[in-house]
Length: 330
Image (cartoon, rainbow, N blue to C red; front, side, top):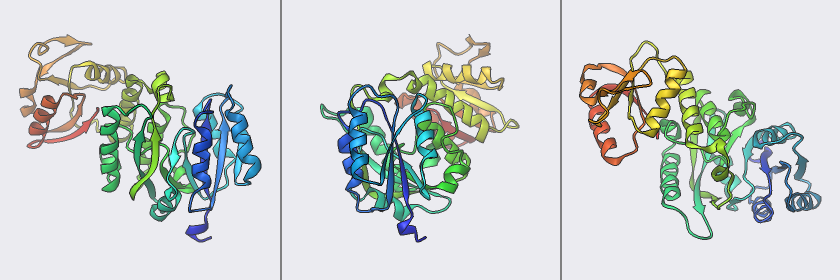
């Protein structure tokens, strides 16, 4: 089958999306690329969204309505995938909107071993917060330069509802089989671990909606601690080298969380801080060292749990003249 006619299976789990689902599905129906199937998986909604989904399924044979037999977004995605038939796999959120050329652009970039990644634009009816604007700029810059995985430990570097992969690559990375949250970031790490590359679209193709009851705002699965747990989990699995000294820089809230994760995993590390008030203190059984001591570390790996701009500048100046491999954990 020609690449241009291979079916794209779009997995769309939803729960109580009656205010947004119709606009979302309409944006799929209006795609310039018509070779797709949409799997609407109802994750036990108690509003009118199941009726909306079923109405679309009755009108368009490419749309399937499926009831999640279990509970939770991961189980819903597994159910959707089990019912999919396409050679290409993507996913969608029930409150977002695709631009008409979304699938066309993604298809033009995808290849075996290469995940197509779409540039995104956040929107919110009552105004967008600065944090989302910065995240949008950051992730789009990575996508434009096809270097998404270069900063994979900072944040989720693949927009969860705007990627496209061949089924073979998707399954190589474990598909939706993992039970770890945040599920989108977990899949991102598994794509990275599988050695896949990225190819970004030429412009914005996905409108990413923010609102007060968005799942990522409401669920503990998407807390800062959940993200840090996942980062440490995959660093130790993918990039950690036990033959090299491991350094942790930062003794604030994030740094302490990373330290606890390392201690729990039984991984030895040296802990540095530029906060004079904390130098010499024993925290969790590890004595904090002054960053001047980094001069004695010739070759190693560094995890950075600092988000303060002045602290970032100092770290960059130190690591620029060292042989440390740096992994930014914020």
